[in-house]
Amino acid sequence: MKFIRTEDYYQMSRAAANIISAQVIIKPDCVLGLATGSTPLGIYKQLIDWYTKGDIDFSNVTTINLDEYKALSPDNDQSYRYFMNENLFNHININKNKTYVPNGLELDEKKACDDYNSIINSVQGIDLQLLGIGHNGHIGFNEPSDCFATETHCVDLAQSTIEANARFFDSYEEVPKQAYTMGIKTIMHAKKILVVASGENKADIIKEAFFGPITPKVPASILQLHPDATIICDNDALQKVSELI
Image (cartoon, helix red, strand yellow):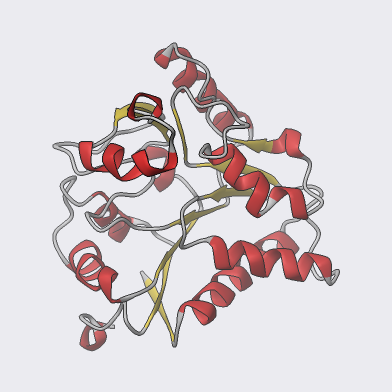
């Protein structure tokens, strides 16, 4: 694993965007695995800026997103499809027909997962997968478990996640209780992995995930076995592993 230390969130975002843009420049028809959440926002903002300046061309890029809430429509402002459109796709010259997110409206779980696995297989895998990391070590919606999930699967959201999301919806009943997520096996098959983390509240999990035992109780720990994984963190997130890197 390769660690890159940055001064702050802005520099972390820029360093990660540099790696992603280099991938696109080297292989214009590459497949990017993308993530949602607050951490990647700075990365997407930087990529948009470089596209606007004419430094990067996304016209032949394909994207595969990690996950989506089950039962949310793409135009729901809490769906991950909506997030990606608003924070990246609407602002660059990517072909949206080649931007893939699990189909949250497909209520047949097996079909939804099989369809997404088929899409991933059809593009011959992911060249670079962007990941954040949760405080408990989750990647995508792969939460701590007794085993590593393999391919796309449906997960029951933790009660804490449901309660945290409730503020975004008009009623508790509308809050998604399940989600479709890419599995650990699929993530590990990406040619390159890029993990980003920022802030002192990520310091404990960075140490546990990347310097502790490999266990499904800490899903991100499996990334220790990936042959080409880069971890970009700011000083605060690396404060407990400074002597180890």
